[in-house]
View 1 (tube, rainbow, N blue to C red):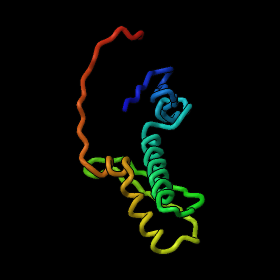
View 2 (cartoon, rainbow, N blue to C red; view 1 turned 180 degrees about the vertical axis):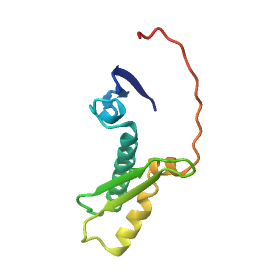
View 3 (cartoon, helix red, strand yellow; view 1 turned 30 degrees about the vertical axis):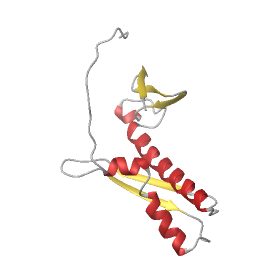
Length: 134
């Protein structure tokens, strides 16, 4: 999997993933134009989307009609000595059984983004000099 961020103007970047293009920017108070979500907001969006899709796919496999699923993610970025904190709220229809709700909440925590953020992460970083225009 690959994502490429290319500066457009100011703090705004075009992010290309396969055939898709997203915009990331910073808020005005951080020197951006607020033309899109911040990178941290995109991370929270990735978690929310992953939880929702994972829960819906599991419910489909079980033949459960869960109707509309909604996932809210709020986050507090890491500060010195504290980890980043994510608050994930899975909103499900009230007609589901206790067993379905319990199983879906367990499955929600098993989405790939949740597991990635909860586990150990390693970085392989390098700098490449190219003929990009300044």
